[in-house]
Amino acid sequence: MSLGTTPFNRGPAGGEALDRRWIEAHIPHQGPMCLLEEVLTWDAAHIRCRAVSHRLAGNPLRAGGRLGAVCGVEYAGQAMAVHGAIMACVSGGRARPGYLASLRNLVLHVARLDDLPEDLIASAERLAGDGSTALYHFAVSSAGRELLSGRAGIVFGAETTR
Image 1 (tube, rainbow, N blue to C red):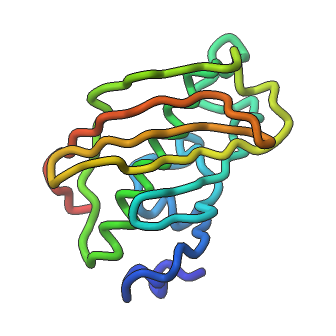
Image 2: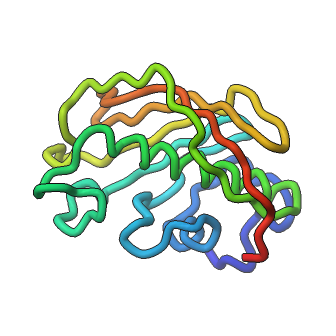
Image 3: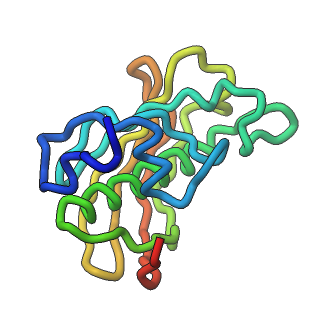
């Protein structure tokens, strides 16, 4: 899909899938730090993204050759950022940068992510929010198994010119 002709320039498109190129063009995470491969589905309150980067030896979040399960929070955070970017595009605007302000009810069901052979699915649901904050429930799963979940509070910064 061409970035210049995405349905978001015209309004909602029924949750159409978006590729990595679209993601990188709309969130601050670039190159290896862009952990998501594609948006699978989205609507005004939900997003589901697929990731394969947890298997890469060059994943920038690896420490000691391992990718701990807590790094799944970053995968979910990027899904939330993409959701915000999509919603901004749908409304004809530009997303404001968001910062993780709180993390609640984090439950880790595994110790690490790098040893999982299947793709990761990062899902988020926007529970509440206004122009300056948002509250999301998130989960990261693989092969139908939930790996981690929690709630994240996001605070939005000033508008950027990017």
